[in-house]
Length: 298
Image (cartoon, rainbow, N blue to C red; front, side, top):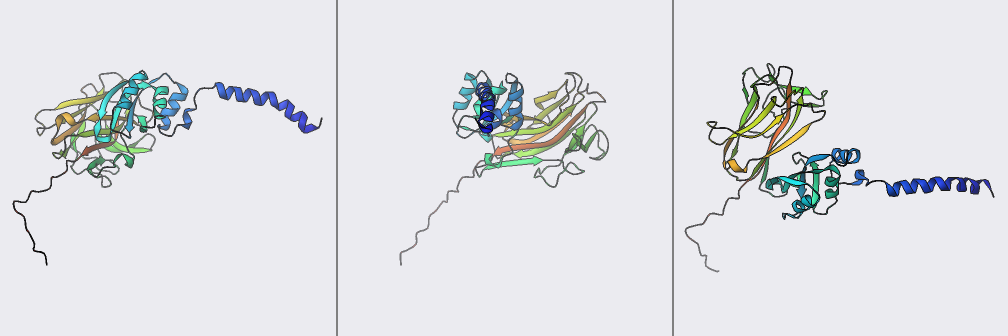
């Protein structure tokens, strides 16, 4: 027996062990191309962890919603404007759902950035990125001005400012102190279906009494409705996301504001990376002419 044969015989048991380990290991979540990388990582490290996700669909039926229930999860929001829905289920089950051919993309509860979600010509996206030393970002298409709540000293001073955060990897609005916030409006008279999304980070929230309210008004600010709140305790190590259905308040010129609670501590911080509204504009009907013109054939 030559040296090569002896080496192969010695390696054969090791190769068999490696093959057996690969066959008995759990699913390789990193191979799933329709799930967000962070979701894949969570499924690998803690498969049973409950996660909130946004599921983009290819079709407009409810088959995927029904499958979420069969996987032990629940659907929490219908996001018709982007042909998607929000759900809560185990991380491993979310990745299993991503293998369904009817899924376009699954992310942690986040807005849709992929342009593939805007296939129809009547879908509109308005976005404020706060990527310069003012609340009116020239690189975004949010058309209405942003106004401070609780102070009036501009975006470069005070407790409501535009600044860097997450070690300089992001830029946005920082809120600190009680009853501080930012307010704007968006023209949604031409739609009855819209979704509000935002990216944010909490830092140093010590209790549930520390929160930021998200409120809307469709009567010019006379009455405000709370559509959600981002509360403590907690600090987000990375950017987090939230989405809210605006349909109950439309059509309207919709006022929007984010305000910290009265118990917001002096050392607590809320960072807002962007605000975004996706809506479907109603198509204008073709005008009916009161007369017709007949031309003679020549």
